[in-house]
Image (cartoon, rainbow, N blue to C red):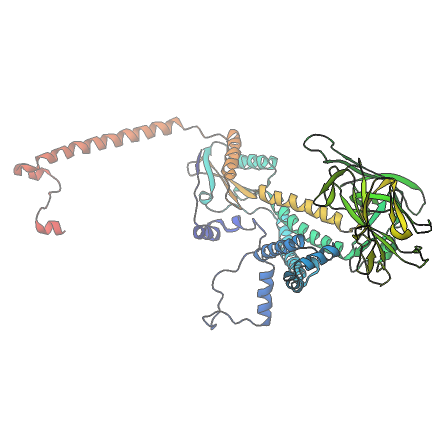
Length: 617
């Protein structure tokens, strides 16, 4: 067998496709082709054709649906998502946005004008999103129809000159051409090629899954975009903090905070109730990883319309799913139980007060607010407020403030500072329940004239001055857990689209579409000449290897022809005669050494002319 392989330049390859290969190189891909060449018509100006409205619309549509523009839009969409990840978003946490604006007075107005606090609902992000959506659809629809047409058709026949293909081999065999073609077709069919006989050659093609993967990848992108849009329009997301022993009903008024898409209605909230039975958090107690969380889980009881109670455990990244609604465990903390009495000894407040952690040791801050029922020593109505700071494992004081040395509840201490006056809850303005607004409040004073503060151990009491009452840290510290209740109708589609996109991308990258031709015909000497050639959509070292393997298998069925002995004898006689003639000519050329003897000059058949005229000739 013999094989040839070459690499042509781009121009040579284009000329080859147009002349030698014909349909052989056509339809290896459904990618849209750019219009090339000079499109000017007769009488058109040298600067190019003058486009009308329809012409400009066509040009814009071709640009929008090109793969280049789709990739640019996808890149811009990825860039647009960066500020949405780095800058606080109103749709996620209003408080963080307000804190950012307070800390960056110069940048905040600029970010507001650029809609960087609402990236995913901004005009510019939506424009990129819609253009990408239209571009993908405009690119996929024609390619899908074209690919369906390719599947319904057969591989094209062999080109006239197989020797010009990148991978080529040939040999002569004694087998009949029909037998070789049938053997080749059977062999290619076993290798999962679509093969059929066209004239004196077998045409086969393989690797259609490459284009399937390419189309699947782009369709999956559309599915992901649609799922993202549906999720943003129909989603609902709310947060709820529950102390052990308390519950929650999935109604709008029971949420601590709630956000939803523009098309979401409260009627779509799944009816259920849930209560926190117990929260368990464990930590590493020894070694270099002391304080590292080991277990975070919430034991809950929930019920739906049927009224039956069900037990469940919610862990981090293991949400509870109730009829499509997911309940996630977000965070946890401590809620010391306190009792507040007025000057007459009447209990005006008793309960667990959730405090928010501020570090990894669960040092926590918050506020204890007594809004109703309290009367001062004169019997006048008043409000009490206590700034609270809690540590689960007291480690002493540093820089004037106590600190915790372990997140577990081993040595709890509660520090409170007492105030009285207006809490500001009657103003009608929203207020953070974990912060104490002391602008309209008067602090209770200690003996030194400072704000009355005291660090309390479980069971200890702080007496307010002048018989104003007391606050007691009870011998019980409960735990709380914060949950996120969300409905995301597009999440399943988005996940499916992501998986399909990865699978499609892998297929388009690792599967190569290629064609193989096997031509068998009778030569001038009556011996069958077998030619095999292959052509791929892109250059690959695997193509010659695959052709070599196919050729070796077919060669085993149709081996190289054995030379005819008579032909060999005739060839040997011809070679001997040629050698004898060459030897005789060589002997005659030996007489040229006597050219110096003028007497022998007539022995040379072609005398040498050394004159100036001869040199000129």
